[in-house]
Image (cartoon, rainbow, N blue to C red; front, side, top):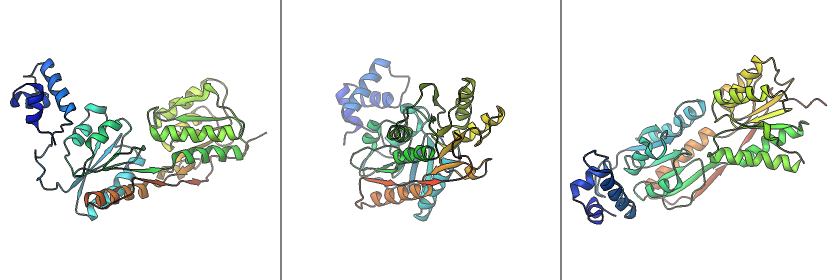
Length: 331
């Protein structure tokens, strides 16, 4: 494993200069800092926030890196992982990945400030995760498929979920079906969209470009996307929202415009958050096993930390939750 001395030697600078550069100190010029960072990257050097050698003791903490810490989906996930951590006598540190490669979360990963990490953050790159994962710092990824040492995947079958949601609407007689999407760079969103397209294609139906709108997986985004759809003057027979938060935002937009759900339009969500069955009408949705996935990720992380062998990938199923927001299409 490369040390800071190796970095300083390759960059042709003093050890203190390398240290200043790696810590972003203004004492070092931009040119020198770039030279040091390039040397660190070439040597695959990573700072350790607690010690510079391999003999340090465990921190008795695990990290949970999420795109966002707010919202009911994340709160259920955090609770399930925290339960596993506490049962093992560990603390859980949860932090947001907002800011991408310059975020505190990425710094946390690079410096191995915990004994392992669980990551559900589409804005942290595959390369960063591969670089950070090691025998002393295993990582469980919950939002994409990556193959690398000391890094495993725990996924929900989002493509099947998207297909099941859309197929359900088709079987109810709906022929014009929109999809309100999440972030374009989200693995889960892409897979749900692929499932949606597969169901349409099998039924000989087409997606209309004017109904290709994004709500960014947040309630306000679903509200705005639905408002935009209403303003265009023609509504589809049904809408598949990429998550329940956006669907709930859509319900508010329809209510404000005196569009009745499900009499005028049917909607289906994804996640089955706790609020889904309490809105009016109760939301038909695709249930993904949030707590089960979080608990599994936690257990697998501890197994890797203990040196046990685990499979490289795990995929969990989905379940259709029929409620009141979808009815048969009116011919």
